[in-house]
Length: 334
Image 1: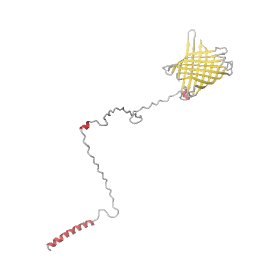
Image 2 (image 1 turned 45 degrees about the vertical axis):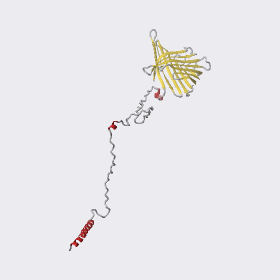
Image 3 (image 1 turned 30 degrees about the vertical axis):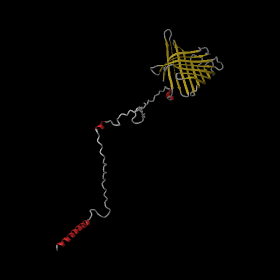
């Protein structure tokens, strides 16, 4: 074989060897079975690349010393400052203390509020005692009470007192009076309607009990906090049980009530009721009550009362026509 032939077929042999090697590699079996569905491999999540931020500019020494805009004082523009009112309910505002809850009052059985509920009641007890010794010995006392209540359309006023006097161990006075009155009010109108009743007991009178009942109209001439003046006119009946005239008698009624508040602690009052018979105005009765009340500082619910009461009967049937009592009392308000 000559040299030209050997040079011609050598490249061809090398090319055949390379092709044969590639074909043999392709014919080798795969590392996983080829039958059926191939196994799905989930690729791992790849974190996104972070965005590159531009480097901040360097801070100079002068910038560090200069005040910031948030802390800088406001510029003086000459305009008045603006005041912003902040609602107390908004966050950051001042905390307003809630009003203290007062405990509910406790009422006792002897108070009218215990039976009729909390309303503008005015009630109290009265007690007075007088005595004398030496050449003659005497002792007298007066006790009683009152209940008053006033609303927007009514006014209720009642009182009860009892007088007793002994001299040298002998009883010379024993009487009592119950006075009840109810007025209907009509707003700002000065006119009123009323009903009233008085029951008088006296051990030393010829009768046992004197009872009268009346009704009519009233007029408030003055109705202020510091002074009040009211008059009334009406009609009714009266009777002296156990007396000489034990029968019902028709009578008229005229009344006057006056109050004057000198100061917060001193009040003057007067009350006069006149009851003439319709058939004969010369037969009549008069009941008067005048007094001065002074509130004491200690205790706060106690007052001093100076009063004088008189009951006059034009036909006393042989006994003293006047029944006068004057006393100094202590009032304990409930």
